[in-house]
Amino acid sequence: MNTPQQPSRAYLAAPIRKIGALAWFKDNLFNTWYNSLLTVLTLVGLWFIVPPFLKWAFIDSLWYSSAEACRDIEGACWSIVPNNIKFIILGFFPEGQEWRPILAMIMLLSLVFYSKERTRWNKRLGWFWAIGLIIMGSLMYGGLFGMPVVETAQWSGLPLTMMLSFFGMVAAYPLGVLLALGRRSKMPAIKTLCVVYIEMIRGVPLISLLFMSSILFPLFLPDGMTIDKVLRAQVAIILFTAAYIAEVVRGGLQAMPRGQYEAADSLGLNYRQTMRLIILPQALKIVIPPTVGILLSAFKDTSLVVIIALYDVLKTTKVTLSNPKWTGYSTEAYIFLAVLYFICCYAMSSYSRRLEKELHTGH
Amino acid sequence: MTDTQPKDTTESIIKITGMHKWYGDFHVLSDINLEVQHGERIVICGPSGSGKSTMIRCINRLEEHQQGQIIVNGTELTNDIKNIEKVRAEVGMVFQHFNLFPHLSIIENLTLGPIWVRKTPKKEAEELAMEYLEKVHIAEQAKKYPGQLSGGQQQRVAIARSLCMKPEVMLFDEPTSALDPEMIKEVLDVMIELAEEGMTMLVVTHEMGFAEKVADRVMFMDYGEIVEQNTPKEFFDNPQHDRTKLFLSQIL
Ligand SMILES: Nc1ncnc2c1ncn2[C@@H]1O[C@H](COP(=O)(O)OP(=O)(O)O)[C@@H](O)[C@H]1O
Ligand SMILES: [Mg+2]
Image (cartoon, rainbow over all chains, first blue to last red; front, side, top):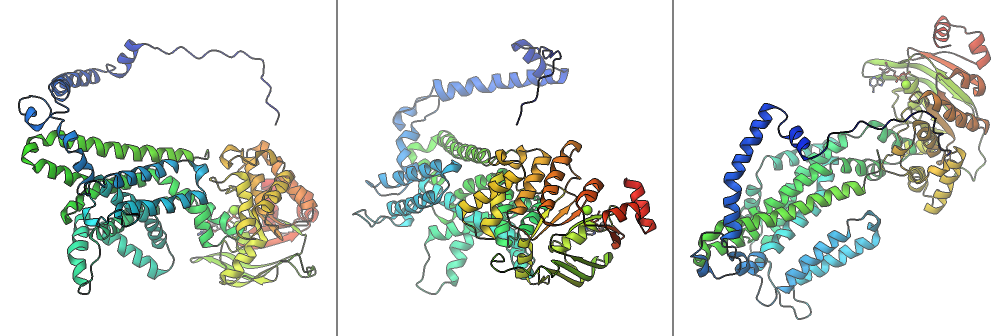
């Protein structure tokens, strides 16, 4: 295409904007009398909170000491974290085998990280994941290459949290999409089934689903037959999360203009092709932000598995605190845990923003 | 497929007999009878709400008719989904608002139909797509996304997308109504070229210059009926019905 000719007229410079710190303060913090008041009140509040906290956390604190040394100080005893880090993170995983869950977690994170670029989404990536998951499973369970078997009852701490939430999300997502499609189906039986399922699950707290999976469900199984406890919790989390994802996805489907269906129809695409190639790619992209919200709460909700006696990373921290030596330092331990959760959640939401950008096609 | 057998060109490609359609209780189309021959170009005009869109959308079953018969290229449109998909693959449609797929690049928009419906190998489909993009004078935009194109360019892509399916008939529903004036011509030019190549076309439009230039027949619809149809010359110079006269006096 030929570039447009520049017409010969005067192009004026844009008016100069006020700059400098003083102007910024005036514009943003003291622009009206009530904003000025709020600013002053906030500053006073911060003055009372921040310095004492800094003193407690950094000046009077101990980082690498014994529990005894902590008795004599005013400040924070961060030593609880390095002294118990192995148990908090890995829980009851057997002595000497710690490298296995650590390696599995690193593998999982690397695969997720590697998958972030759209150009890598091909068959090969699928194989990477398939092989990666098999290796991770073998690392955790063992029984191969002389690795002793570690029963799932001993899986605990961060690997358990990561596993429950990762598989919870990965399996709940497609299930949620199917439920959303089912709820919009023209076939009354399928539609009713999906509506009932979604509304029932959403009407019940996750805790009660976990209870049912661990107490009620085994009653219906024939004698002598048991299903792994971790697996049951995993299934409960999947079923729970899927119902919420379904509703978000349904919102995305409803946002699709009718013209997209009509264009797909008029090309002769069938229902499945239309959904897979035209509707879902767009609808799912629209709902990335609310979906991530659900996945983040799913991640945090995994801590509820403590009520069926699984030891996720929150429970291992509590166990540490029940040791008389460390009992008094719950604030420090929970701050550490909060930071850990925050890092995970922040990583997840950055990842999703990255994904959104990757899928953006300029419309 | 159809390329292997010689076509029976004496048979009309679209045959609508005694067709009625209701939206709920509203009788939107009444006793539509229409026969279209291979290579014929028909322009349909009429006031807004007269049922023009509904009628041409019945031809590829975007809307369902309740009474009468529609036969497209020898296939009758019934509830049989296989027949519907077959007819849709043979009938191209261009919409007022383009309806390109915004998440796919231009070339992907074009190859989608051939690859998934016609089962054409990807490479071949891409060559075909480039050929048609060339034809609508927009080949240099192949890698872009619809959102990066102007309205006129998008509509030409939409035409090329339909052509990639090698349709027997093309339906156009007010293809230039959503365009800025300076872009209307580039789309009409493409449509005129298409007509000159002998494509069977049904065009809902108020571009009377286009009708005069390419139409074999101009058809006037009002209140869900085909009021009259004639050659462009007769239609414009010598309209028979008062309603047609009124309509023409309003738009010309
Ligand atoms: N989905 C629908 N449901 C109910 N009425 C409709 C629907 N689509 C169109 N109509 C009505 O049918 C009539 C014909 O519409 P349409 O075919 O779009 O007219 P035109 O294309 O000639 O402007 C109009 O009165 C319109 O309001
Ligand atoms: Mg219309």
